[in-house]
Amino acid sequence: ALDFYLLVYFVQAGDVAAGANWKGILSSCFAVFSLVLLPLITYIALRYGKIATLIGIYFISALGSLAKWFIYVPGNQAAVVIDALLGASSFVAIAAILPTMLADLSAKTKQQSGYGYQGYFVAAQNKFVNFSIVGAMLGTGVLLNIIGFDARLGELQSEQSLFWMRICLAGGTFCLNGVSLLILLKYPFTDKQQIMR
Image 1 (cartoon, rainbow, N blue to C red):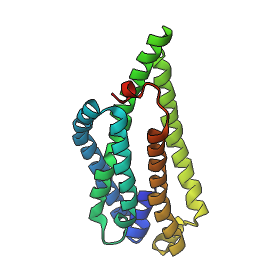
Image 2: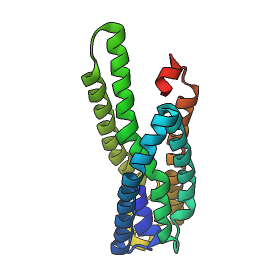
Image 3: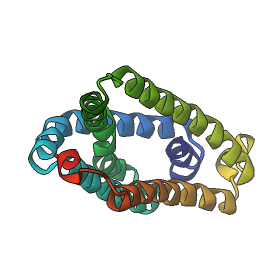
Image 4: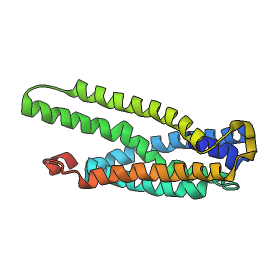
């Protein structure tokens, strides 16, 4: 949600309508790029493996996170298209790659134990995603209060508040992508060849 606040209060100097318009363009571009990337990323996952594909996706998303620092600045509104292009693959990963990995894990577990756990794995993923969404919403509100954001000030937000908003948007997403990359690169997957394919 920080991208919306930056678009309104930093990029568009408090103009809610203009900021919301650019947020709409950003969201539309995310949707279009996700649809376009879906078959490409699926092909790459089948050809090079799911883990290798996820590593590539999180690397590109990490670069996109750093790019946010330069995208969300006044006069650079049209660059939100680049933000969508660099970030859309992470949505494809959640929608297309992770469910197939859960299906693979369920099949492997059933083969080893004789019991199917697909419903359990899907329920666990859905619970995690829903908790993450709620946590992000609550966290954004708390974070905005901590950094001194005040909607009543409109375009008169403090420079410190806007600076920390930019740090949180670029740095926070970079850290999350970095953690994901570290897990994929360092976690000792058992039977790694099978999992990677």
